[in-house]
Length: 309
DNA sequence: AACAAGACCTGTAAGC
DNA sequence: TGCTTACAGGTCTTGT
Image (cartoon, rainbow, N blue to C red; front, side, top):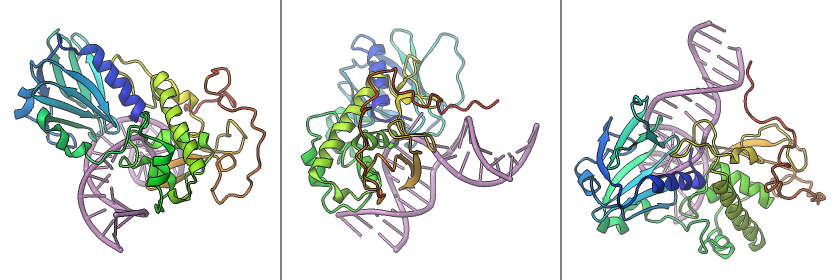
């Protein structure tokens, strides 16, 4: 479920609930593992300790105390929510954090692709999952020059390249499709075919689409929601993701879908160049980003919600 | 080293 | 209606 914008929203939700004053008084598990075995002995590094900082690195949420850092990755279906008074546990509620102010935080994760680990604070710099991650896409380190240089000699599709967390973090299947649409570049071209000019476009559009999604509260498809259970709305602005056979908002061509390295990939063969797909017709670009104007975006009206009788 | 494909899980929706 | 299959926001491992 969660790419960088969604993880960022969840992290902000945790910031609102936790602080130096409000600590985690107790960590409780309702099963013994997610993707990793749940940490038992190191719980004491977190429990009753002052919260120094809550941050995000890539798709990981980090809750730092003097002794330990609690690490949460949401996998595909992980959520954190506040458990209201007398609320019964639900299916797939795996972890509960009792807070010093009486509130309870619940981690729910049907598919259990998530991660929940505790690392000694003084060993964080050698924590394996954060080693060899690429730059944050919204940081100044993620530049066109960097993308151009790292893509030399790489034959994998640009789409797969951008989803490689060693290259750049936080970009997943939704936002890579969206960013490539705005950059007008086919997901199929080899990474090494990028020109510097194309790199400029891609970097610009990745930053823009991620920031706009954060501003919209993320994309809520199926079950994603924030800690306070609010839904994001960015899915309403998706130009290609999840829009198979619907018409492109820019040129009306039908949106294509193809599996690339195991993930469904959506794009417009007409707007996105390099699909070894001929016509490069310089479409008169009247509608650029319909994004900022909620009035635009509609196009063909119907949303990809099922209306099943 | 680089790349593709499969594995890990469960729920939901589509297809028959 | 009910059974079967395909697919889902992400890593991580295995094999070529």
